[in-house]
Image 1 (cartoon, rainbow, N blue to C red):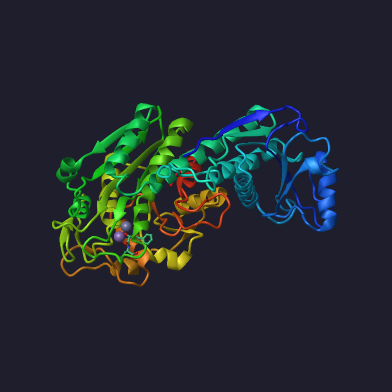
Image 2: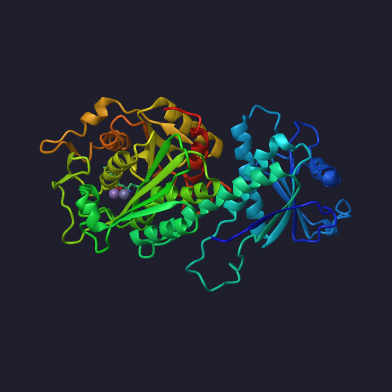
Length: 508
Ligand code: BES
Ligand code: MN
Ligand code: ZN
């Protein structure tokens, strides 16, 4: 991840001598867009030409040195970014997403001109009540500025840009500062999840998850527990052992805990940490198999969220558990038809070794619930290809046994732009999992594939309020947003943080 410092300034805007001066401009129906009075002459000219109206997704780069209208500015370039008509029927969540996307547009423009710093001027109507929008803007800017170059050490002429190093915002005050802090924390945690996902499977193994968690705990007040292979066996986590059987690399269960004094409730987060999913003996086709290095995005999300939790120190206890292994087809691998026993004693017939995520999550869910008695559980997993068929790449699939929990997560999803959509979980779906030989089988046929996966997990949570987020469609290949560059999106991190923030006053 490339770091970008965020600063506030009150120095003169016109005297700013840097690379890129950025103004936000709001559309205003048929009238001249609303903008800072310093750039009114420019906007007037553009508006008269019909080149710029301040609409969402509109931006224009200007060179003040060459135009009469630009006289008085000392900067090299001026970027105008449209934010649409804020009076129109958009709700607060949509405003926030517009600002996030505008942030993404700014970082893309900075990339185009290879600017490593910029000065951002907020519209005059952005006062205290709108500071959360500024937070969204900075979030989008930082997220859009993300690059992963660990394995491209040689610089080419085309690719010698290292991203923004400094982002300066014209403004002042404690509440603005706090809102920027929160934005930075969320964006950096999401980018840490992207980093983990971007690492190839030979460089992001269960041990890397362990090391990251241990280092995080060493530098914060989080507690870290790593359960190794022999203990996983001893505890009877048969799903994790089964999936790991065909691999030369040992599995781990990685646990991070934030335990504030006098906490009133406990949130358990569980993330699927398959560092590579070959499918096992039920081998996947070769085309696109390389993408299965991303099969640990759920695990990356919950561990990275803890990074922000460690800084934010919410008043609730938060426990994150990542069962992690790769899914390989070595000679001792599980075979279709094998029967395994999970942590809670439930036996499972493994019909398809490629439905491995649910096998490791089952143990982690049952273990976490027994060990930490949480008030609610949320799991995140790149669990089924079927969720992409159902919801595409724009919403995460959600299944839950608790309406309030589901609504709370939906709200968090809308506010963070990480939207979810609830799917049903009727008993009929569970019936699809009935096995001739064991308590349950691990696939329920093609029909409703995402839901039967959720129904499988449900067997391991008992009556604890629980929600399952299938992020297979949203964890990567999600390039249509200006603040999500190609590659892993870091989905779930900001949603979880927002969700945790909503939890302290709720009883599920
Ligand atoms: N990790 C995959 C799900 C996946 C597929 C994520 C495509 C992202 C993109 C999961 O382990 C898997 O293989 N699921 C199977 C389940 C099936 C065998 C019931 C699937 O979706 O095909
Ligand atoms: Mn699989
Ligand atoms: Zn998988």
